[in-house]
Length: 282
Image (cartoon, rainbow, N blue to C red; front, side, top):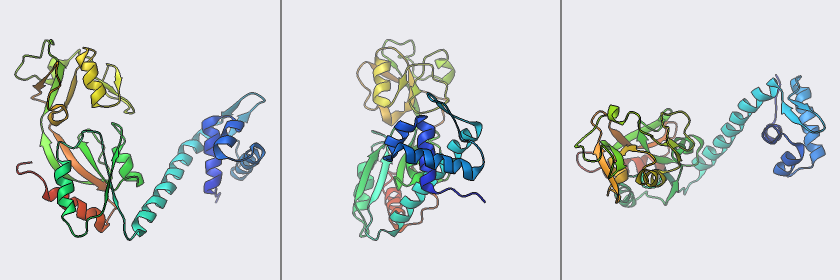
C-alpha cells in the first residue's frame, strides 16, 4: 500500500495549483530545492510522473490531475476532522452560526433571546457567508449551525428544522410590464434576464453576476435584470421596485441546519431554542 503523508500532499497540491516551483515554495515557506526533492520522492513512491517539467514550464500529467482532485479532498477532510475533534473536546465551547446577510427572515433576534434564557447557553458568534457556501461551513466545521434556505441550499448530509415558510415574489423595476400585476407565473418571466449568482455553478440566469441580494436589487433598479426571492428578503420593498407574488413558485423555507453527525449538547440546546422561538403559524 502506497502511503503519503499530509505534508507531502500539501507540497504536491501547492505545486499543482501554482505550476511554478518558486511560487509554490514561497507559498509553503520552504526552500525550492526542498520542494523539488519532496516532489521527486512522491513520484518515486507512487511510481508515476505527476508533472512534466521544462526550463520554462510545469504542467500536470493525467496522474497529477487525478491526485490533485483527490488530494485536495483528502486535505480538506483532514482539516475538517481536526476542527471537529477540537470542537468536540472543548468543555466551555461557544457556538458559531452562519447565515447570509439579511437571511434570517427577521427571526434571529428572537432565536438568540430564547437561547440566552437557557442555563446552558454559550456565546454565539455570527458568521456571514456568500450565496452558496453555508452548507460547506457546516460540513467542514467552520460553523456549528446555519440558517439556510430550502430548496436553494443543498441540505445533503445535514439535519435541519424548518423555522419559517413563505411565498416567493418577482422583483421588477416599477416601470416593468409586470409591475402592476396582482400575481404572475414563472412562465411570465420567460425571456427576462435573471441573476447569475457568484460561486454558484449552473443555473438558468442570463443576467449579470451578483454576489448578494443588495447587488441584485441594485441591478434590478437600473433595469439590468429581474429576480425571484423569498418575500422576507425584499421587505420593506426598496424605492423604485415592485414585488409581485409568483403563484407557481415552490415556497421558500428558512431552516436551521447542522451536521447530521454532530450530537453535541451545545448544538441540541440551540436547536431546541430556535424551534421554541418559532412564531405561531410558521
